[in-house]
Length: 202
Length: 202
DNA sequence: GCCGGAAATAGAACACGTTCTATAAACTTC
DNA sequence: GAAGTTTATAGAACGTGTTCTATTTCCGGC
Image 1 (cartoon, each protein chain N blue to C red):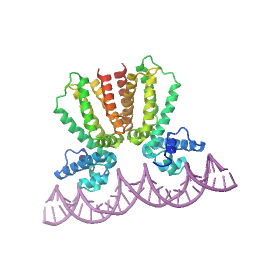
Image 2 (cartoon, each protein chain N blue to C red; image 1 turned 180 degrees about the vertical axis):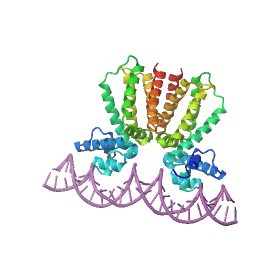
Image 3 (spheres, chains in turn purple, green, yellow, orange; image 1 turned 60 degrees about the vertical axis):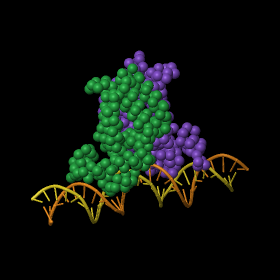
């Protein structure tokens, strides 16, 4: 529609921005988002505040991320990638898929729970996303799925394994949300995840 | 805090409103919500529009439902109760929990998919709800859980059955959201639910 | 170096959820 | 049935996400 549409999409995808200045701007924006979210959660991520903190104009922020939800989900992807990389450098202990998946799940969950506000901001954005953020959502979903299939085995995952990974991802997210909205304690979450993984993998 | 706090809570809980006029007002509000949501989804449920259509003042709307999310989640509870009652009047076919749960799941899912906008509005409200809507959320969660445990057996559910019901509920919701945001087709949803229930009950 | 178009900036403007204010209507209680 | 209290009303006002406008800066090709 708009003449610069494809350019804008490239900006959103994020990886190959034309200039170094743009890559830096984008990074400043994501950093500002994460900082604000860490401090005050979803509500504290106000577009004017993000723009201020990242030292860009409001219009520029919207050129890079077309909505608050896009912004937060993209930041979630960034964070998950970090976690994934860290996980790749760890040897996951455990003899069975059951044990290994539980290990991964426990570790990431505890990691997120260490930063409740950030987690709240990201999960709420993720679950609130509408169709327009489909691409970002898919990116995050894939990351999650691969996180769990990798834990199950080193080989390429079977369809059944993928299905299991997806179920685990769904339950994981829903429990994270329950925790974030204070309807479940950290212990509840751990128990339910353990139970779920047991049902699926034992 | 405010002098009429307990009264207001009674209004929110919804069942025993002081006067018939109030019960009617509440019903008009929920009806208006469902009508608007059915036509245009979450975004079409605008508080001014709901108030107009229900023939109440904006302030009154807020006295009955303290936020848009409360309003939509309460309406979801109303709808789920309707579905549950209908289901109670049906004899669920199938010899195994697996078959019976799939039947219930399929029927409710198709019911929701018949009204995509309404489903979109309600699921988005449900997943976006924050701590302040905890009570309403719990009410809906319980409804969902009991829906599935009832399908599994007529007796009081075991802990394991409850756990399974909860996992199914999580997966169900997540797939509904995926469908609503057009990241999954109706067929995808049906397949994934079938797969999930198989993993859990077979 | 200079030109033309894309990108960035500052800030106004708009939409909708939410809150507030002032007034009127509807009830309770005596 | 009058006084006092709660509830409803109309509408202004406010906050934050989003869009728009006018202007300036940046960057690639000559």
